[in-house]
Image (cartoon, rainbow, N blue to C red):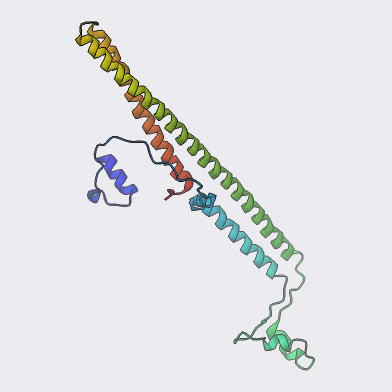
Amino acid sequence: ARTANALAILCGMPPEGFCGLGHCALNIPPTPRPNLPAEVICRRPDVAAALARIRSTVADEQVAKAAYFPAIQLTGTAGQESEYLANLLDAGSFAARFVPSISIPMPDGGRRNARLEKARGKYDEALANWRQTLLVALREVEDSLASAAGSRTILARLDEAEKAARDYVSIVETRYQSGLTNYLGVIDARRSLLDIELRQVQQRQEAYQATVDLITALGGDWK
């Protein structure tokens, strides 16, 4: 019941309204579709956050660069050329227009240069962090894919072993019923079959875990 309640919360549902999972045999988990584009990992929270930090630092750099330029209106309210721009260098209106339309940055002891260098440094840092985050994400995807593929291969071999063990149990039981062997041979054959079945269950659990790891690495499923 506690496990069902935890699953309900993970699914975004109240525990009392969650339909519990019935007992059923676990088959091989689904395999991801081929040619899955690498862009899907942008759904990961860490990758998305790294990209957002890059955008933020780019905006900071643009603000720092803007401090070097005069503040001037290039277009008027109707989207046409601003009268301030047209008359900026007109000798008759220069004195009247200069103060309200433009402010030229004055020497500030290198503070603007420092702010720009700081913004560029933050951008370089954000870019390096994004690259590292992306490499980690790609590694986790590759690891999960390898684990899932390995689990499917092992499960296929265990299925073959289980079929052979069942055939052997049938043969030994037939020999026992015919009086050709004692019952210890049947017990040993059934024990071997049970061991293989237990390994199948364990391997299916590992296959599902690899699939869950892959979904986590991708930031979602592949549908």
